[in-house]
Image (cartoon, rainbow, N blue to C red; front, side, top):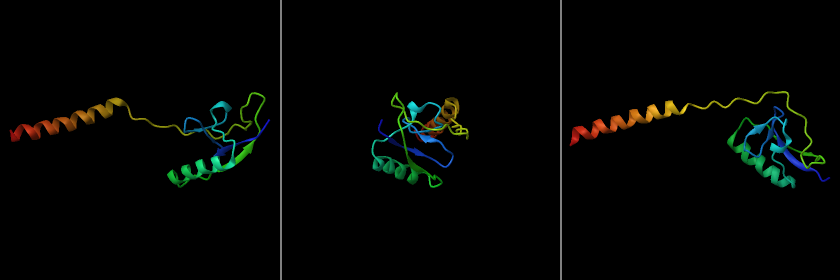
Length: 107
């Protein structure tokens, strides 16, 4: 089977198809490039967005199922904190109330 190129960071995580770092437990989610220059271009784009990234492009073989053969990272993935929709809605309500009071005084 032909080899493919994948992007890995300093923590051993792999760049995924979902445009997030994955740990390699599910090889189907890892972004793979047939050509090294494609992977290098993606790594350059990632590096411009994250100055702390220490990434590299590595060549890995494909399994019989066509998935990259990689070792799973021991480092847990960072958790992405998402603000609840309620907080966003309450700040929107406050700003619209301020606009309403400003226009009410001028009319």
